[in-house]
Image (cartoon, rainbow, N blue to C red; front, side, top):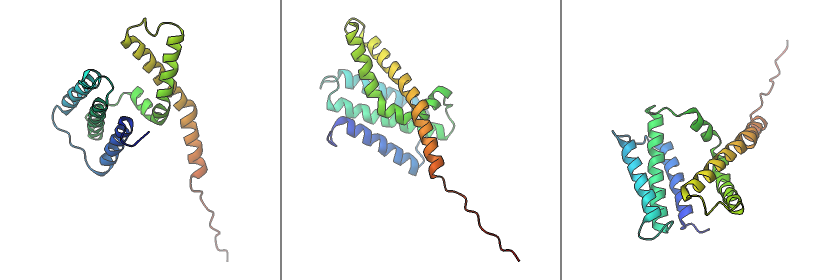
Length: 171
């Protein structure tokens, strides 16, 4: 995979958004959530139906930029407590690394199973997509809860600084 490929650019847009969010107070203007939501919907439509065709370079970049705007807006809203994060989303956030690492694999496994079952082409595309994504999210959540979080906790315990006993002077 090359640095100029859409997936790499999308990843770098996410990294840049994260770095920016750590260094500055992100702006938040009235109705920003609605505006960014509209931009995101437009980017999805462009990525899917744009003149370059579905999943083309320009559409992927547009979707990456729109996603970065959504992420920055959500961070700004959360920091100002302008939005309450539902518990289920907070739990997904806790296992986001598992979600990041395993979602493509699990989506492909589900799509392969649907194809082997002979229903991949008979179901509407939105149903196939929904089944694949929902199953992948649930699987990633399980991986995160059963593997990622326990391993992280174990590593933190192993690498935590230990208190050193200081001998006291006796007379």
